[in-house]
Image (tube, rainbow, N blue to C red; front, side, top):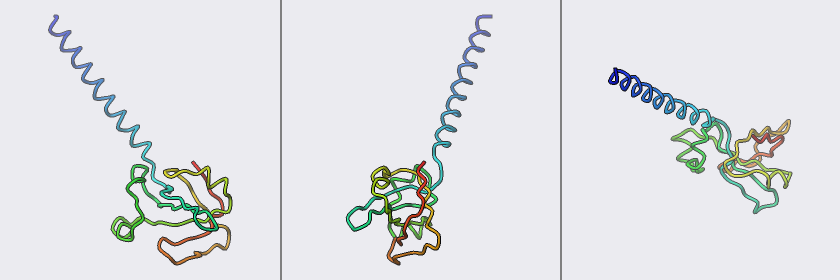
Length: 125
């Protein structure tokens, strides 16, 4: 009888360990949200800019350096957005998830790489 109880306890513990591992993995995957992330900031010119890598996972933020080779091989789109609001620029941090909507009738300002565009509305998550 003691042996049967020990087997049941060991099985229960093993199932709890497996369940906690699966729960932890799912929680980590839930935080790895795909979206647009700020990977750089530049306030050296007249207008502050944020560099956004579009449609990447949160875990890719630090490895999404804006190189043309990476853009082609990993198919990551990069865009500099010029911000007219300095306080918004100061509130935004590298690694933050954002959605940037261009103003109506917006167009790409600079055909440099990465391209640049004025930001209209910036949604900060």
